[in-house]
Length: 245
Image (cartoon, rainbow, N blue to C red; front, side, top):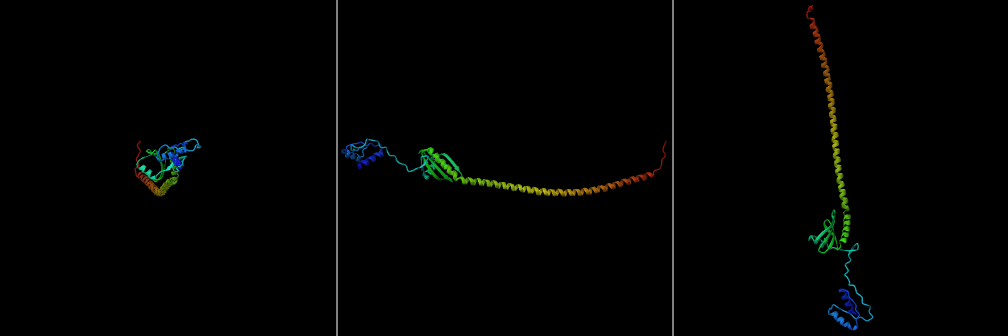
């Protein structure tokens, strides 16, 4: 019976085996054939055994892989991925980058294998591999969402830095505008004072000139009166001449 079990294990490893009923007398011959490594082996069972039925070949069971949509995804060796990348053996199918985080879907044509790598600051962080493109794309989108979530803080920081810089520029421009307005007011006030002083000086000069004009006019009128008086005096000394008829 032990020989029977050993023989059955050997047949299951090679392919489909068939149990054929034989007589017990042939069992030593079967054991001898098994010892010589023959490719064919039969074991004679009692006549009461069941009908002949095929036994399906056993397949190796993979080490429990991760599952994406029911498809197998395996962890990839980081050193292997980096070496393949350095040898330029990987073709990029998809690339996503957000600040210091990036995701690459890489195809190794020689082995028909897809690698999905997540990088942080250009350093490989995580890597998975699969032989199906659809599965690789699902993993890529998963890593893409993860990288986007990780970069949320970076995104917010960049936005706040830009807004703060914009506010700083607006403050500087406002301060410059206020300084220009203050300068304009000061300049306008000084100019207004200058104009006021000038007007006062002009009015003073006009008054002086007007007084001079009045005095000059009076002097001129006096001179005219003197001339008129002198003319009258001169006319009185002229002789009276007869009129010719």
